[in-house]
View 1 (tube, rainbow, N blue to C red):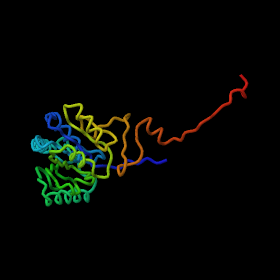
View 2 (view 1 turned 60 degrees about the vertical axis):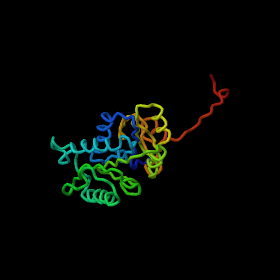
View 3 (view 1 turned 90 degrees about the vertical axis):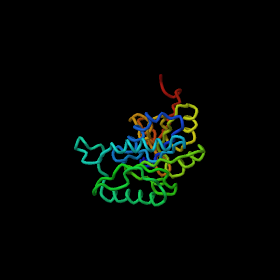
View 4 (view 1 turned 135 degrees about the vertical axis):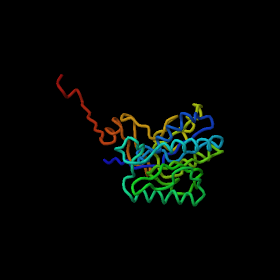
Length: 236
């Protein structure tokens, strides 16, 4: 038996009626804590065109409060990436998106050898690596949409199936997105990195194999065995 936990490029759908005041700190935290080095970090945010620009600007203001630095220092809101080559890789992906037409609202550059500035991109090309692969760094991509079907299609395009989220005040819209998004878990009005130890947690397709969680792990790492007793042959 084998269980694998890989990564993803977690999508978030933001509807026109979303409470942005509540959503922004949650989305920002989900994208920037641990410098984005979480398998279910917020990476791709698909926002209704009526709120997309405002959301991106609010996320930019949030990102500018996330000062990277030595995690042992109180003033550091965000630590380094795992090794210097990862800083260069994230920088390369951001530059690629910029050259393809993405608007860099904040960040977009390395800070020394080990840190990368928290970055917000607006309308990055769908084909760019920051939209199709796991960036595993402090980068949030906000994309504007007018057609919800198209938003779901873009959210589901990468070969990852892990956690997703939707922000809306409309429970019907929330449940429709939960049904349509390719996620093993969908958070409503919370970020994609939400987790408690006793909930099922795991990915499918390129995001992993098997589900974590107490009963889920027991089931996945066990085999069933049947015992049949003919009671007439056993003295009472």
